[in-house]
Length: 204
Image 1 (spheres, rainbow, N blue to C red):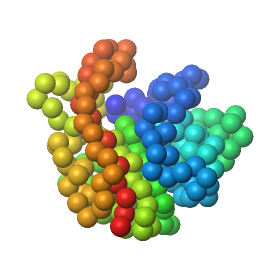
Image 2 (tube, one colour):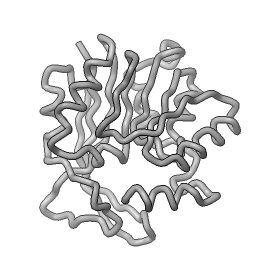
Image 3 (cartoon, rainbow, N blue to C red):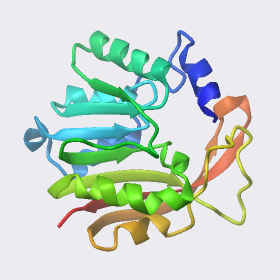
Image 4 (cartoon, helix red, strand yellow):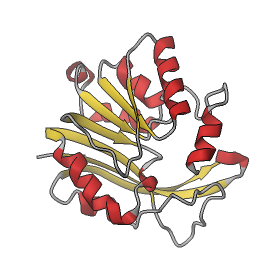
């Protein structure tokens, strides 16, 4: 979706993506035990309305939610208040985002397609450099697939990844898990399918 579409969706009272965390968010704790997670710094790229950011904060992480939509970030803060946790927010375009401090975990689902192809290598290098040794990146990307058409709500500023593209950015890290699949989606109220890739990698 375009930025204007997201802003309009997030300005509505209800939470478009719901308030429960995505399954990928829970997978973070397959690689970092919850008792050791408290206080770790996590950045959620493309946090949307904050359902995953708030979940991470509930587990004791120090969370920065980044999104291009101010309305989404306002709902993130509202949800955090409802759950009695604290989440920091930053309105930013992922293409120009600069992380000032070191982080332990980088998490992103449903947002990496907004990184324009010619800018990806630079931004991934920056995110990797800001990550401490032993840190974790948990990433979801929409990918090209010969049997899948472009989604009806795909924005002009969204770009699919090539298959194995994420892996190429992390050749110098230890890849803990990498999976590719096709799934059904009903965003925008129109049934369609996506092909996706999830990469979980640890910095040496």
